[in-house]
Image (cartoon, rainbow, N blue to C red; front, side, top):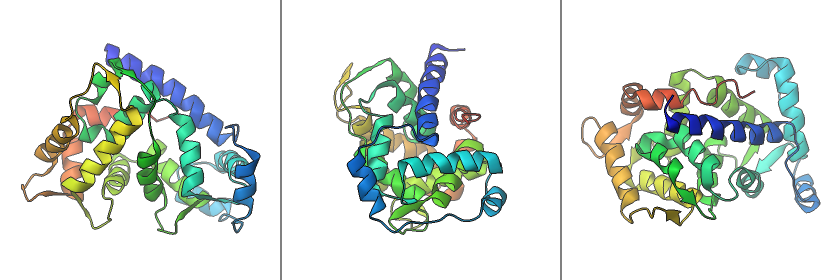
Length: 255
C-alpha cells in the first residue's frame, strides 16, 4: 500500500470517529443552539419501515441514526447555519481530515489532491463548502434538512452503487441544478475546497492552482468540448479513472 493510501486510511479512521459522534449525538453544541433549533417547527420523520425500504440501512441502524440526529437537532430539522456549525466540527483546522474528505468527495476535480496530504495546513474555513454540501443534502430545496434527507444521502454515500454515488456528487457540483456543470460552478467548488484546506499551506500552493484544477477537470470530463459537463460525461469519465473508483470505496463500512 502506498504512503498516500496509508495516510488516507488513517484519516478515514479519524473521520469515522467524527461521523460516529454525529450519529450517536455526542458532538458538542451550545444550549443556545439547541434552544434555537427548538423554536423551529418540529418534524416527525416517515415510518422506519418506509425508510428501511428506501435506503440501505436496517431498521436498527435507522433507530441509531435517528437518535443521534435528534440529539443534535431536537426540532427534527436542520437549517443551514446549524449544518455549518456541525460540519465545522469535522474540519475545524483544515489538515488531514479535510484533505481526506476532499479525496473522497471531490477528487475528480483535483487529480493531485492526494499529494496535498503531505502539506501542513493552517486554520481553514469550511463554511462555503458546507453551503454547497447543505444544498446537496437538501434535495427538496426547502432550505432545511429533515431526517429523511440526511439518511437518504448518507445511504448513497456509504452504501450506494457507483452510479448513485457519482450522480449524487454530480448534483453537488451542479450548483444551479440545470443538469450541467460549467466552469464557473466548478471554480466556485474548487475555491471552496481550498478555503476548507486552509488559506496558507507549506509548501505554498500556486495562486493559479484552482484554475489548473478546473482546466484539468474539463479536459478530462468534457468529452465533446462544448464547455459544460453532462451527467453522462461525468459518470463515464469517473468510471474510467481507477483512483476515483477507489476513492468511492473509502467510506464503505464506516457504520
